[in-house]
Image (cartoon, rainbow, N blue to C red; front, side):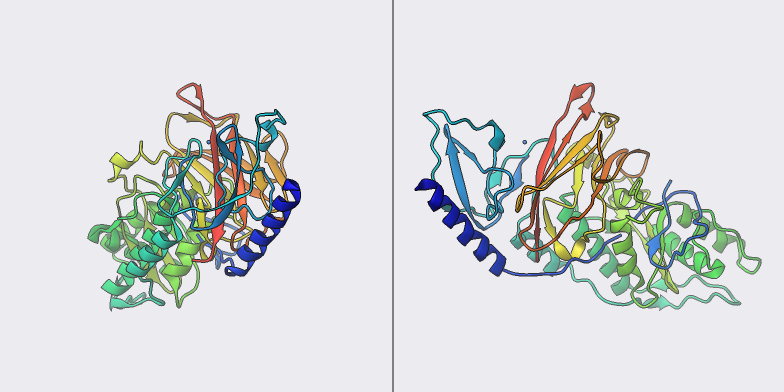
Length: 409
């Protein structure tokens, strides 16, 4: 009788969650390294680069109480947002065990436990409020229009365009749970704009651009400095910076997925200041800044997609990543990904159910575990459990386990 009641309750919850909203996924963007892409189109990608506390959602869930603990079995439909503090496989049929269907309202201020993830989980309300306070504008405007002929001038973005790009960046960082007060720096803006103009002049993406004969040495030096310290992309000429930021976040083409370095620079907890440039579809975002050094130890493990992930900022063909700072060893890392709706499981490490990389390089955060599951689906309320084993920190085993819930925000 109890089992029948549970099934009916779960079915009803699943139906209600399905009716709660719908949305579509869209991709996002990348970081810098001293290499020029060859033999590949750069029109739609950036230049290649060298258990857990979570804020619960305002959703109705079903609790299972076992010896006073709140659990929810893996792969159970209709338990999106459920609190889970132990694996269902570890539950026993002991006489003292009781399972009761209890519908509860989990407030957005509540916290649930995860392991090893050192960033906060946002609520939908927090995301909406932050997005509303950080508007993003379409297009590119200039206070000084670039001139690639004679006399050469890199130009300058107007304040609205630069501020919009900053807002877009901080939206993505807030979603990921890292410090989201990155400020514009005038010199970084100058370097990034000079880099974008130089790339547009040459018509080639490169962190080491060559000097055109008709570009003054001072302008070239400024552009070269910007190109070597920036995420670079060639993309939509009409909405260059928004398109570039999406490319930097996605970072999942064949030239970049092995490190997702653009993403790591972009979401680095150390990033405190930045600058932007855009000319004729070429974009630069200054990323080699570490002025927010006090945030490193607090946000040492950064998963993406985030624990509450807006569908407009992720795509099914993008890589998932878990970035970590110094002191971590990921050489033995292995990942298990479980979809709660049907219990489907993907494994990476000893066996690969998709693409899998362990990247160690100085791209924002030094260590990064990267995996892209085959046959992934995204929809509002779609929930995945992620577990990363085999990681050590300062020689001690360090378990990372968290839940990703996709939402329309």
